[in-house]
Length: 448
Image 1 (cartoon, one colour):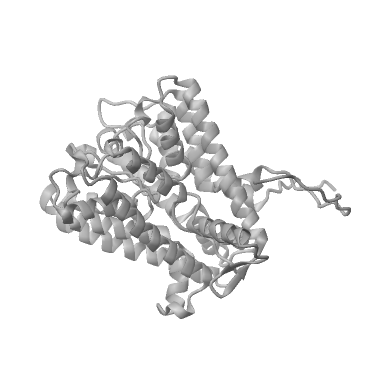
Image 2: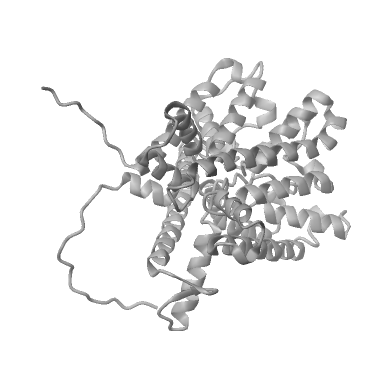
């Protein structure tokens, strides 16, 4: 009797390969002649770059989305954004439920990892909450944007623009269609509170994470009942927005960009500048025109990103909180890492520091390679582009379209690693090994 060959892959490999499959399918769709507007053409590398950027909800693009891609191409990009924003496993889990009526342990584990859940039970409810919550927020965002876009672009285009930008903002993608009407991202709406605030709220909600929504819903908006993760995400997010808005207002007060703005308009522009680097990628004031301090602040915000299990990328606010509290605990000589009335394990700090170090090394090595490939590229520009890619933000110093093929391949790898997750990718590539029974003798190294 012949044995059936069964390919065994880990849940980490399943997630990594799933995103890769979506990207490759999207690149094939975008290479089709009718995906490009009449008179244009698309190389496979640029199609692959765009598909990766859309699936990884980044926003970096070698082309102006509204000017280069046809309606078919734009819809493919929007579908990739929605798939990447909600998470590959959300769609896979839904298919499993439709075909089988239930998810197995393997599928539940994969979804739990991808969605940021902590328990195998209640995942069906979580999937429904993700789809319903996403649909509600994107619909409401589109309805509000219609108020501005329909009078400007007509009913058909106005609704299409409203839906597109609502989905792109909520998924923290940063793709826009303003090039089709002669705009540079959202610069035409920098003084418009309706557009700026609507997109900002969508970006923030999308970046909070599906688990945070679920906890807030189950707690009936009672902060006393929030889980530790929810409290930390909300507090750190609010603090980052408040501090970064104030700093942008200070740094850019006398900038040429702000010269004709009154105080309210400067505050609005600074708030949007603080929100969009949290992996959204839209801009109302061109990043290349910001002050040096403003660009450095943007890099720092991009690196941090949003919340785990959300549409955002980056290091994640939870990871940042664990590192900071761990640092404080070490400096004060404490044995435990305390956050409020709770204690977290040191193993979590080890994971957080490993992710931080891996992200930093990946960015620096990639930037170094790009500078070596393109001698005319400044170190600041290379670092900005690499941080934007690995954090799946999409902001750029107007470099993406002029980069060489080798540099674009580097950015493709960074975007993929950023969306799949550094830890997930490392576990997917790593070999499964058993722990040795005998532990090695302890020694020490000098640090500090």
